[in-house]
Amino acid sequence: MMKSMEQIHRVKELQIQQQGPNQITKELKIDMKTVRKYMAKEDFSPQVSVVVTRPSKLDPYKTTIDACLKEDEQNRYKQRHTGKRVYDRLIQKHPEFDCSYPTVNRYVTALKQERKMIKNCFQELQWHPGEAQADFGDCDVILNGQKRTCRFLVLSFPQSNAAFVQCFLGETAECLSQGLMDIF
Image (cartoon, rainbow, N blue to C red):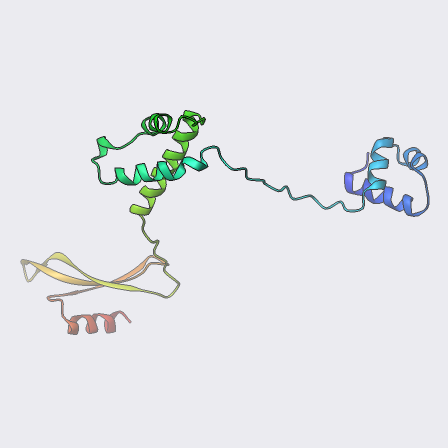
């Protein structure tokens, strides 16, 4: 049995040589329907499926739901609308409302998640190779037999997780300059 693309090419070659479907079927020992399909088709590129988005039954009511949840931002957590409460209010306000509860609940949940993400958004730090960050910190050391609190300068390279440390008795511009000179 031939592989599919080899089969297609062989059928097309025999078609170019003016052989009919009966002759090709006998020669390649494949089904007549397959031969006719390959002979009729010119482009064998995979077809990209087109996703058609239909309007939702909920679309006319989304502004009402959005406004309801927007008002909830001023209310205490326990006083906010649930998906069920939003559904019940839509049924009360709009007698023609014909969406199911799960549809409303999915929309309310997605909207709440989206607003939560916007509220708690953060930006991911990106460190390129060769970039460094420097900072001072505190540490306790024993210096001349006495316990003291010292400052230390850390120069770290986040891309490689390498770090260099210098200890000082203070945190001044001179300490920073000396520490960087020592590290480099």
